Image (cartoon, rainbow, N blue to C red):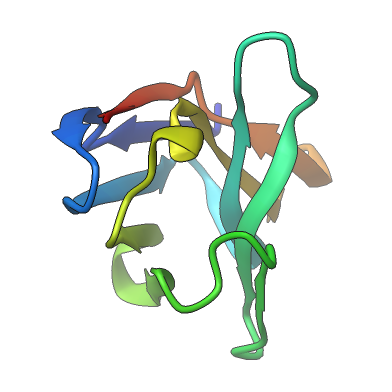
Amino acid sequence: QVQLVESGGGLVQAGGSLRLSCAASGRIFSINLMGWYRQAPGKQRELVATTTSGGSLNYADSVKGRFTISRDNSKNTVYLQMNSLKPEDTAVYYCYAVLSGTLGLRAYWGQGTQVTVSS
């Protein structure tokens, strides 16, 4: 069974940095896309950043220039380096992956990790 396990969330002051990690495990044949979404209280889940197997990167306008997504294909792991954090970045961050496993091509979500930025 495929699982996405996130780590790296926490509490940080405005202007600080955090690095999130997400490792995909299980019987995985290939990963098409990995990325991050976030959901703040009372708001819809929104895209933060994604990276494809071909190396394409996509960022939300609100995080461009501050967040960097990267991927280690040998470890089936995606990272999100978050710098210059703002209180409005406070949210639960979810790892997301589209991959081929024993159930075919499917999308998977991690359990979420809380990021809190204090002013």
